[in-house]
Image (cartoon, rainbow, N blue to C red; front, side, top):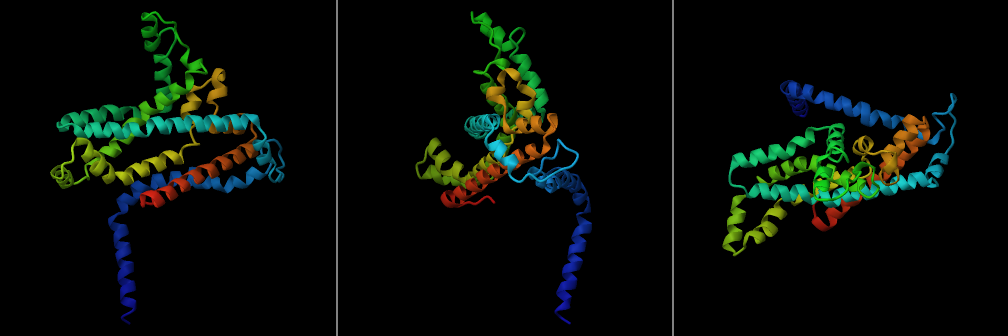
Length: 307
């Protein structure tokens, strides 16, 4: 008799929590439905990667032919190389930028100034890549762009940034940093507020200067946040799409075509869905490997697993 009472109380507590949090659950439902429709439901179609789906009314099983095709395709390997170069460049140049900006903001004494700067650098994150692409196209226009106006004013010749093989990748990296920097900085600023002031006071008493407090107190205190941000960046390392799609053109395909734009052309524009799904599966496996490797590195050397 006594063994049934805890079960009944537990069930009542669960139902009570559901009733008390029903509005929070309703707010959560759109996100859950979105993930089910666009993240998990497509997993049911992975088997099409082993078929010739897209060209014939009758779908037939082709085994690993699609994967053999992508491994022998020069266009695929060029897209794979471009993806790695652009993504790793984004990580190398972008990853430390929000942290540095957050540390600088944290040094400000005025709360109003902190909030204003955070708001100012966070605004670009709300712009879609279409808007960001339009802004950079106008800024870098060889005839009316602000950048080329400055170049010609100092005696230089206009540069066709958006159609230049040499300059297009730096444009992508710069636009990525400009749009994403505020988001990362806000996360780091929020993390810095959790550092206990007593730790700084103790470090000062021990003789630590400004850089000593930064190195021995601030960075170790937000280490888990830094590793998490790195993991999030690596999880998207092969999934860049919208930015490149709205900014590249035929003149820079050789240095700008990435895996996701390659999948888009093969699957949506050309109709070869079976092959495009195979490429997507290959990309997902590599991305998962990068995430698991980063988590293992974090567990072994930083003693803080993220997953």
